[in-house]
Image 1 (cartoon, helix red, strand yellow):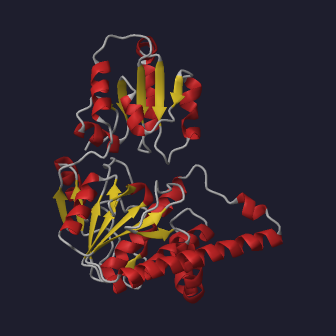
Image 2 (tube, rainbow, N blue to C red):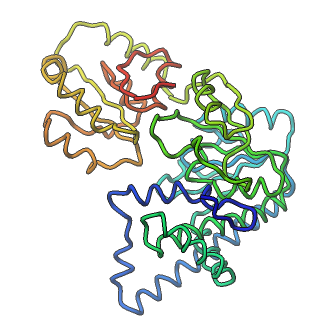
Image 3 (cartoon, rainbow, N blue to C red):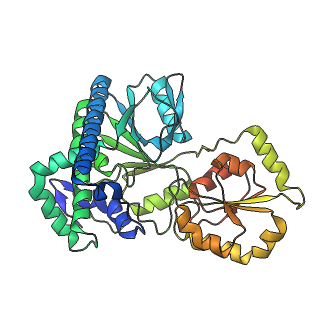
Length: 402
């Protein structure tokens, strides 16, 4: 699809949101707002408007105070673990090196953090600008009033091929175009030479296009790995027809195999391999304990943890493994634990729980779940990389290993 907004491929910006909407088992609803009476609904909308205006004003003031910057780093709130000595601490150690190097060279650098409600920051931070998510819907509504014809034409174009209602498509398209205008203005003001985006797919597409329109170099650094059937990455068959699109110019890969796969896609101008660094915070005591218990003979109290992610065929792969090894699991381990990705839901795994009542959900942080386990079965590409970096043994169920 080559539907354009000015010189930009709109499909490159909206396709992941469209895919997610098409594949969603449960669509989010705001039932309380929908069911409220007229006055209550008006009050709720007024409060949202005030929050949006306040967030936009605060963000604009912070951006204005920052002035010109050579380097911009764009991350989500789950990418920041805290702040120490007026420096941010990232969960991505490779990204931490980029940030630290910029500060040590006295490069003018600013970090802009998308403040996600689902992933609240662990502490207040002053070394970054917070970008409240409520800003985008507000800007989108304002922009739609002045750009209604162009957006409606795009929605009509996509609705022919994309099985999503026009109202949902309008929201997706208008939000991304609003982001394009908003971030184009920000980059014109800050005038950076390079922007780093951590895991930008389904997060920063419009911002990447805005940076390209302002002739800013765009670099992607991802904290996980690729899956064979994942639609969240640039596919070979995508043709942007010479339009500006939302794929970064350079990709910072974490292994030679990942470099090979990314290079084969052919959408990045440059792919650079980095030495992967673990972002898993196991203490030396925990690592020694884990090493010792793994080699002890079977006894009561042993625990096995299944560490999952939201990847292709994850539920069926874990179910198949448990079915084939049910007897061994029951004879060897007293506790069989299922550690889910933070964005996952227990409801999605209920079929497995009903079939195998001895499997229980873990509520521990990832590092504690690993340190307290005697054996690990992993279906998370990110955790695979972390455990390899820490030289911790595990059973690998991922479909594509990086």
